[in-house]
Image (cartoon, rainbow, N blue to C red):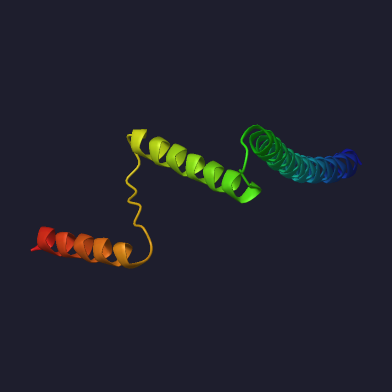
Length: 122
């Protein structure tokens, strides 16, 4: 009789342990889903803040400089962002990136890079 009771308790303990592990996995998955959702919300808010800042910059610049159109301001902002990107890439020690311009000048530079790389291999 003692063995029967012991077997029942052991069976119950195994079932409870499995149920506990199931609850842990479900809660872990729910937490991961919530973290990804909140990360997405954060990225969306960041992008909205960037757009709001750009809009304010365009309005302020257009109002402050006579004859400046919204396109002129956007071109200036894009150029500034491009130079910031180049500066950040150039200052990173681990970064090995080469920007090749597009168009006719870019094709010549690309060919020069390929020739230099081929010369390095031989």
